[in-house]
Image 1 (cartoon, rainbow, N blue to C red):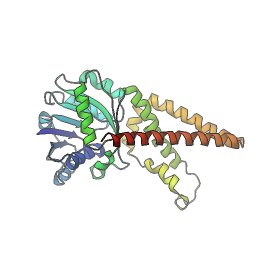
Image 2: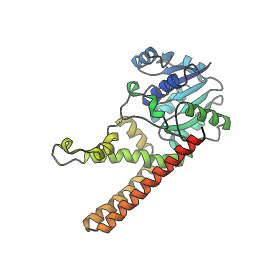
Image 3: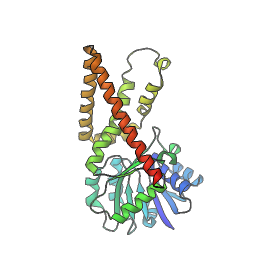
Image 4: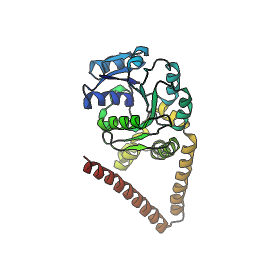
Length: 295
């Protein structure tokens, strides 16, 4: 039986552990490495892992697949520290939310006896820690793989199938540059907007009495892991600043229409936003339809 080692049992690593146990029971022997012994004990008690350690050499030496689910700034340190501990022929999966900078750092350091697949599960929760990990966050979620020239096509195909078996929907192959720009827009900018919106409450009133669904939906992700998101954004500064500037221009257009009492201009902005949102929904529905037909 092949062995999988998960490094870091937070939201992503913990969700991988739960997905492997719930969706592929008996296919893999799953172990975990985490700095928190209580987390390891809980995961083992609940049957999501068979073995857990805070010191990790033996687990890595026996793992056919290693899923690294650490903060970006910890990934390189972990790999450098354990270069000699990976099993020969192992597939190492890196899952952080930025790709270009981490690939530039890691590619020269990768041991010849292993293969790294860089990627990003487009899933997660606002809360942090193993207790909030849930394999259901992977259901129909997107996963972006950013191959390097060291990857074998067979390895990408194998890992893509594993992701589908764990519940992921669309598997996208991307360059690291494109990934970082798109994630700056679809993920990092949205978190910044949510934070700015909720922090801009200067009314001095009891806001909660006036909240509706729109405010709840827009600010849901304002409750975020501040250490992780600060790392992700600062490690992706240039693409993020680019999309922030684009957003500021759009907000300025809306503000100008209101300042000048230009109802027609405001309506045109809303028509445009509605059309773009409908196009996104249509593309997503087409993907789901094609996926169903392919079953």
